[in-house]
Length: 189
Image (cartoon, rainbow, N blue to C red; front, side, top):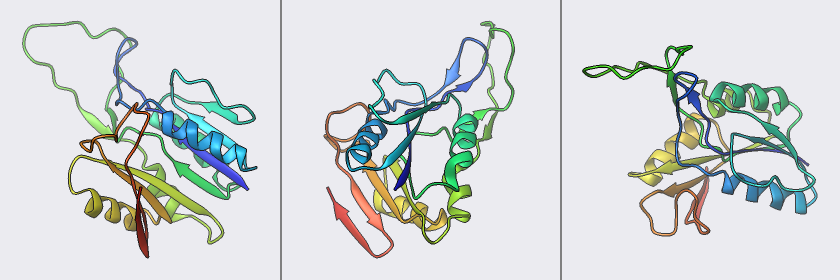
């Protein structure tokens, strides 16, 4: 099987010095890539910046922004059996990139944001019947409701849902607490 996995936190540049991101470390995606490789899959890992050592025998495609990740995944999607979107992809990017460091000034500054491309939504809409897509859903409230909506809206086969506020779950931990949701069942792990 050809397995395409994403990992890490995308970075959305404000200026040459600063960017917007999140707390994802990429550990989940890297662990999934290693597990898939050990099970005999041909694995491609599209990775936003992390401090992790890439798994052996895995093709790693480095990316930075949500747009970079979209382009890398979209380019490989048609030749993929299984897509696992474990990356924490930014939902928003700065509307304008400033080509010089934004200087501090008196008063507040307003940052306008624009939506990034919805990778899961775009690929879920064109998924073939022989492809399997698993998304991830990190929530802080209404875990099951929000995750089930995402599963349906994006035409996913499965979603791994976890709550940042649950002890043992979250970013950068050695453990996790997830609920695997499929259209017809749910498994708590």
